Image (cartoon, rainbow, N blue to C red; front, side, top):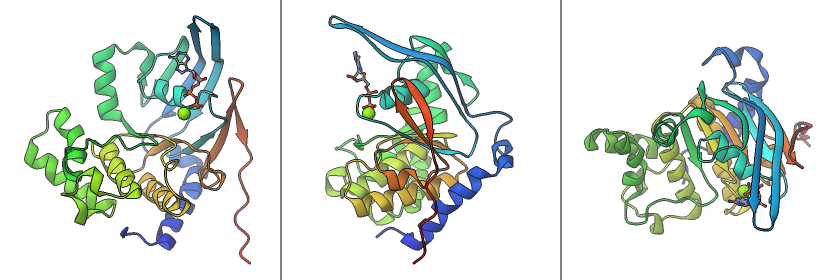
Length: 264
Ligand SMILES: Nc1ncnc2c1ncn2[C@@H]1O[C@H](COP(=O)(O)OP(=O)(O)O)[C@@H](O)[C@H]1O
Ligand SMILES: [Mg+2]
């Protein structure tokens, strides 16, 4: 069982919206936006022709925001997240992310930037099957040169935080889909990044488990003062973010915030 109750998690996710809507929150961690994308272009030239995903994309995300990005398959959502997180390079434009001009990083700098500043969660967990849950969570700390004993202790703390203290010696194959995603979240955050990028993090889960994992993301977002950008197809989950954007035909357009649920 997760340590949080659905009611408590719901409270956390409501406070995501409260928090994001207060202008002063943006100045808590930083003097400016966490993400500033200007004139972003991504154009693939293939044997079959040119594929323009976006030509002049702009996006600003303030500290503390939890932004949902929706849009049809193939719209370029994953590509945008990859560029934000220095996993892909744009054809043109500038991307400032966590005070870093991501477009100017060389491969080694990009690897350090990703390790320190960004937590990634994907639709599939990509945990290493031969390692235990605790070892998987410890890996990003070891990758930056941390001592094994300390890394394992911090990993244990994070597994407790995601409600999986009793599963620390399980290998990924012996965990449920929801548990695997919770381990992936612990791994994403163990290095205390400022920014969480999540690409359909609940897309491979049943509706109930998706809701619980989203509750956890919302709680971690608030408790660790994260700035989060989530790609999701789930309208209900997107509506619980501070802002919802739709990526379509190379443009990001705001979707109206859903009204709060009717308490009948
Ligand atoms: N290396 C590549 N070369 C050519 N086209 C690509 C490449 N990578 C992705 N694409 C295309 O870019 C489009 C957007 O992909 P993606 O960002 O994964 O979309 P989404 O996440 O919104 O479904 C897709 O049509 C995909 O086929
Ligand atoms: Mg995608």
